[in-house]
Image (cartoon, rainbow, N blue to C red; front, side):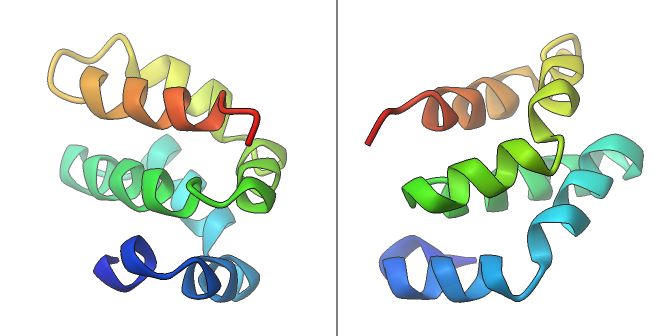
Length: 88
């Protein structure tokens, strides 16, 4: 996801490709490693304001709140929630 990190157009293209629901599914049902990778990817994608809306609509927020209870994934989930809470 380093491509998404450096270029907002790529963030939008990746999101428009339908990856967000797949990442949310990983948050809900993936292994711990997959959940960690999904949170990292969502954090990068959420740097775009329009993507934040798509991420929320895909159901990521409840899944991230659940991950706040996990000792290892807590910090990753908190970072994504922090980015999602930005107004611009």
